[in-house]
Length: 180
Image (tube, rainbow, N blue to C red):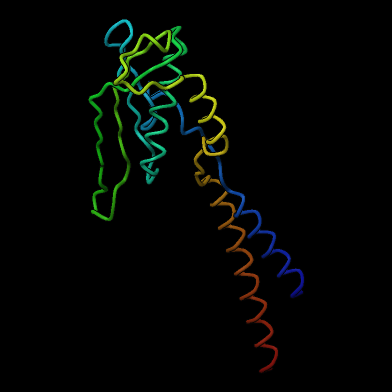
């Protein structure tokens, strides 16, 4: 009896530990989600790139997502290089209980170039293709956030309740037999 209870308990723990679903973090805010990137064309070769991170996403990753989107916008519009020309803006959004930063919002203005020698020497140019490939490679397994699936948590709680009730009932019956 005890072996079967232990087996059921371990099975239910294993079942509830696998209750996660993933969704992409690097996505367009235009899809109605509360995180992700957006970009606005300001001139023929100038764009404003904004990225809002998810809850507790490190600031470095938010900055990398801005650069990744800048590289994609550059390549999608027929350019090969870009420079961050500013102004850059950062926003830290704190949670309602002041326990820390909830998420970062980063915006950068970029100017795109077709050739490396088009830019003034004072600008730091990014090779859009190399940067995009490097960031894709670096964040290959970090493009998803894990969320708990409420349905499987509920099922796990029901299974746990049944097991707990079974254990308590069998212990109660065993103790009652002792006193009879």
